Length: 265
Image 1 (tube, one colour):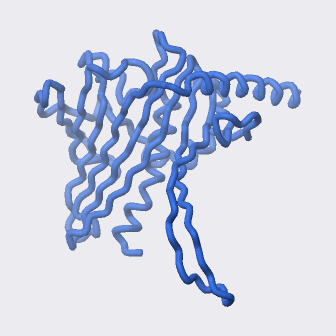
Image 2 (tube, helix red, strand yellow):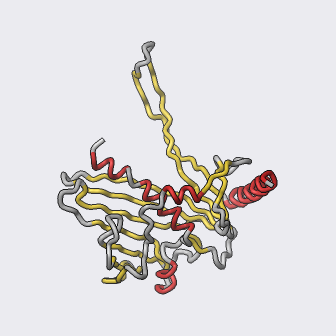
Image 3 (spheres, rainbow, N blue to C red):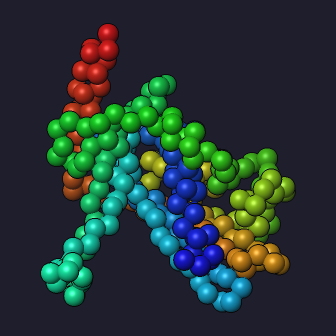
């Protein structure tokens, strides 16, 4: 694996830490919820360009469900199914990809729970899940703990309307370390629901339109393997045909939490 590929593959750590830390530190808003279930998707596209012009690209995403004070992370897993033919010596003669699909594990927790613990379910029909500690994930993935927007460190340098939607360009007054981008672009969408995940409550409220996309641009650095990097975070909202299964999963979670409490007493 070349150095560029390694630098790209190190970035999943950044994704998980940003998602989890920002969720726990108020990265969502369930106020005035009319629908019992809100479903959103948070996606991160990563593009890194090497000194030779090679471009590395990766995409990561997760489904997000909100039911009152309860949250569910739908973590995807890409699966490949192949037909493999081997000889008597165990050598692979052919390996044919038959199909690919995506399955999800569902991590449920209560956003107001001070203990920050939750339960992971194999799928939406799983009756009993396994306890996990969100706090340990935060500790593991909390190094570049910076928000998408920092009121005390960001300054607006340009704004424009693109196809009727507001786009703002910001710069950091101070770059605390290399994880901070050289420029930030905020794309707003006034058709996106004000509920659920938010990149910035401050920007959503003051612009009267929700931030739907955030782009981090990193300038080239002389002598470095990477000559430029782009991180693009995007929020999308969907209908919820699986709403009844989500509500049933929340009820199973509540029951399991009570059983755990009774067992520990």
